[in-house]
Image (cartoon, rainbow, N blue to C red; front, side, top):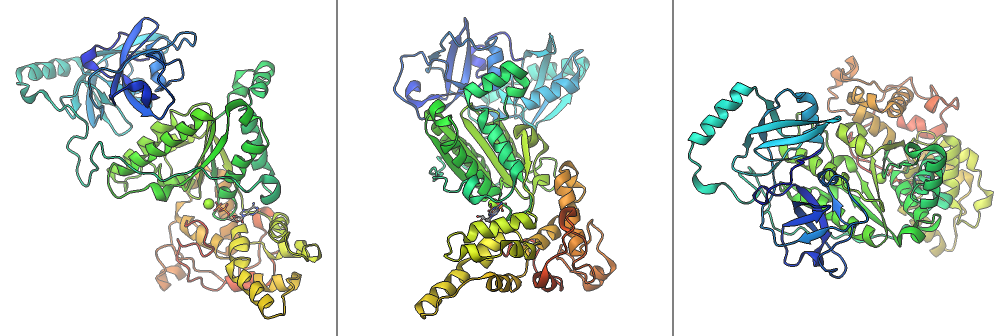
Length: 578
Ligand SMILES: Nc1ncnc2c1ncn2[C@@H]1O[C@H](COP(=O)(O)OP(=O)(O)O)[C@@H](O)[C@H]1O
Ligand SMILES: [Mg+2]
């Protein structure tokens, strides 16, 4: 799949590998690696690691996928040998390239080059296409002057004929090659750019997961089962047996999972519970070592400096790889859509596209003992390639009344009067609210203050069913309305997420909101642009939620159906911004 002839030293490197810092000696960016009578040069990513083990590094080296091909597969019984004293070159991203593909299918070649982040050299190259080898020639590359450039999804690839190739070669050789070309990456980037070697800080410490499926997560049986299945396949014994009985396809796990759904319905909660489950209810610790949970919010990684966000992304992955090396890491990206925006979106800036590239590139490199979970309210804004990197996609729905009853029960189980509360009634009255609205808003800090004050005043409140129903009625359900308002113009984009689409349609219907880009006549008259939800009257209480026949409960809904002055983006419940 890659250059089958070993790359000459001056044409390094082929791709990147990751090796423990201590094994590299004095921070060299490039090493020569020998394996199975073949040697090649690589760009190295140093990772924190144990003591030096001579110059053999075993087989615990992380490599770009195409590297295995270079060595004709990895032979686990034979070590890699490393020469860290190779000279230094950075690999730059290729902006544009002209390729002469001879008789080989340009489309196939193009998609191969992009999907592998292929390292291109300006000479004839050989790649595998199906069972045969195909050659092609890179006639010109942009930026010029590099011996190795990386083809990314952003690279403009133009295929040229043999005639044009000859012409280009001719002009190339007649032009004087003053200056010898750039030696380092970076290149003439516009805008604010971080220095290539400037260190980026990520203050990220593993967190102890404190919530569990059993105790804290109401409903979501399907999600729990998916998570258990995923974790079970990290157990060698289980995996082997599945493979023996049913074959490799059923045993090969996706090592990553995407949770998507409306805000406030448990994505963050479930992610932490998965880490908890991995830690306490599986044999993962016995197999791999200590489980650690790293939680990162997409918005914490974003930076206005071009290049900086990418560095933070890779710093986060580095941290996770470090943890995985000693045990098992559950790496959780909340608001993951901010890190992998759809590169096909015309409104994106160039650096946003390269952020997506950087993230997806890291996702190619995920080892066995690293489970990546992403969560998003806006799955339809993420890059389509991300769906391949997160093979398990799990919808987290808004709970129905039975599950809402369960949410109340879990929230209130510490009350001394917990057993006297009618949870079914609370559940019925909570249709249209998200669990987060109940947990964080209705039973939030204000509620706590009232309870504490009542104790101070010597007249402790007894929060019985009626008291709680009153609290509920006093607080409008806002999250779902805001959410539907914010996605109402994106109904076409929702098509890839049918559960989400059905959910949004059902909610819009329940709330009497219109979907699609065209504002209603009334909305135009009121000048309600910008996605503000204007509640129609009349529709209140009609239609069940998610096809559920239960009529909407009581006072809460009536209050919500006036014209909503909510912005389309803020989340009143203090949960995720949508
Ligand atoms: N399925 C659920 N069961 C119990 N509580 C829930 C559930 N979903 C959400 N909550 C409550 O709402 C809070 C916020 O939910 P969160 O997981 O942050 O939602 P999301 O990530 O989907 O926006 C949680 O901390 C929890 O108290
Ligand atoms: Mg969340």
